[in-house]
Image 1 (cartoon, rainbow, N blue to C red):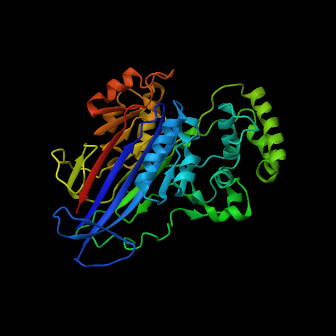
Image 2: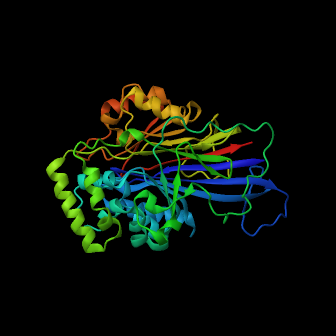
Image 3: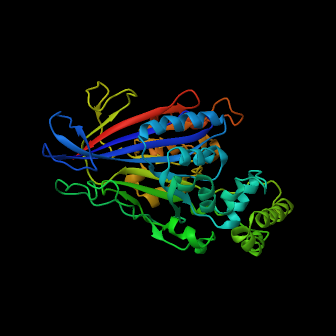
Amino acid sequence: MTEIHALHRFFPVGQGLFAAGSLAFSQSRPTGWRNAGARRIKGRSGQTEIVKNVYRWVYDCGSSTAKRLVTNAIADLKGDCEGEKIDLLTLSHFHNDHINGAVDLLNAIGAKTVMLPWAPLWHRLLIGFEQGIRAEDPEMLFFVDPVQYFEQEAGDGFDQVLFVMPSDGEGPPFPTEPTEAPEPPEGLDDPEKPSDQGDPVSYGDLEGAYGHLDRRVRMLRSGIAISVYDVWEFLPYNDPATKPNDPFGFAAKVESYRGSLLNGDEDEREAALKDLKALYKATFGRTAMNDVSLMLYGGAVGNWRGHFYCECLSHSLSEGCWCWQQHETTAAILLTGDGNLGSVSKWDTLERYLGRRRAIHASVFQVPHHGARANWYDGLAAAASPRMSIFCSDPNHSYGHPHAEVLRDFWKHLAVQVDQHSEFSMRFVLER
């Protein structure tokens, strides 16, 4: 028997987002079976020896309520990771309340892959300028050259950066369901097997630095999902509609400073950024620009029987609990960050890319932009129809999230508030 033990968790960081989870893939093996790279847990019968490997993921890591909330959450997660790196850290976009803990996370725990939405250099600079970041601020390097920034600030805290290209058209079909009991997931016996996700690419081709950083850069093309042991998938969606217009030819002006920005020394880069920021203010003013937006679907692949879910935060998988219930699900989670789902067409485009089987009836749905009305339309809850809907926000913040009409729309879908005082987690066991 193959099982997936899945945990989805949202940390209490207030106005921000810090979601994490783990996936334990287990396969029954004869008693006495040995493999140095695998762990063993008791099966639900308590008799069978089981091979168990853990895959850990994080989606966003930031807060504008208080940095200490993120620091405390990272310490909590570090205890769960038992000295191992996170397998996949995804940053949905580049706003402070979603990324200001990312470097701390990499230094404290580390990540094998950091996944970012791709945006060209001129677009990244607009996002940084719009947030008021100064040319001399260390964080500005993130918008100029994210890989170089992570290498400078986190060193060996990450193995590679995976850029997700804009998601055009339709995504990959939902994988074919197996017709018989599956073989042990490929690579289950080798937790150190390197990831092959994404394509190798010259970072210079992606408007970044050159030479030694190429080995740490990969690209995920549109329509490609990340497979985890062939029984789970992560499918990112980089909304192509977030690319802003360039009415003032800002992209061409950035290109003239390209050498100083990407390959110059610190003084050359700072001087170029000051010139470009002055140009930004003179042309765009302080008008907020469109941002990049990377949403993320995660769920089991194929058909699973005997599905269960648990809402008890203190439940132990080795013991019985009244809150275990049968529930037909792939334990799917749909994370939207600050993505814009403010119209029927926006949702339809996302659904077409993910495929209806992935997009609707997710077990856990993170409501976009902390429950802001501008990123929602009346009826979104019915269209997505999730079992649980999570609002990550600080109701006492000046933004006033979540907005009442958004909360009402999702009320029948077990709306849960996650703020600086409360967190949320849900556990699943899927069997076949």
